[in-house]
Image 1 (cartoon, one colour):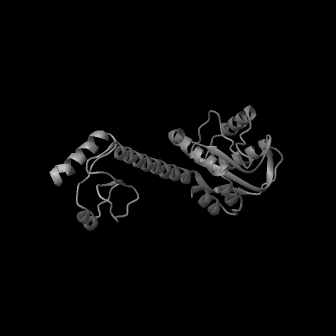
Image 2: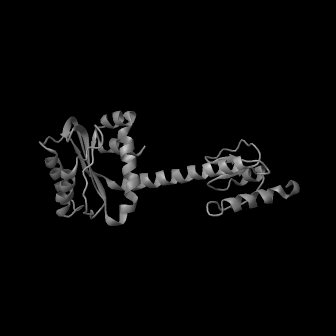
Image 3: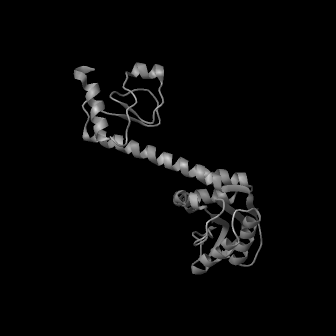
Length: 230
């Protein structure tokens, strides 16, 4: 409360981050410890032993470095929210009935038709979806890594968003790669805006040597889903 620094500091923060921060309250450390209010970000003017996943300590007279530290934490919060939303969306795409293990066929086209028929039988797609996936595959191979192929359509939307999973112990020749996983992806029109982040997370998992080894050792749908969403 010295020279009303408390209010000035809060006003300065509010002015600098007007579109990114809403100040819920200003209180002493003792009050905070008793009330423990819920908040995304805790900004303190003194070092405290209070634990919070997103905490920034600033000077009573706020500096440029303080502003940068607050902004970094805002970005961390947004990244975490986006990641949580992506995981929740990805979890909605995974279905036990669309998980297959050790299917032996001859060509990528055979595998696409096999997975496509499974999706068609369960009313995830229209018949034209399979031909559209084959058309996309004819343009260029969808084997994005040495372990993963992701066949998907060029134009067709799915009736329901899904990922149809095939995990083979024996690698499948796919273009110029040999893959252990084929993830056929179908996205409904309403979910399309959520798909890029989900796709990025999938590719990220299969580009990590550590994660790939974990995924390769999975035997069941539940194990696969748990490792993918970790």
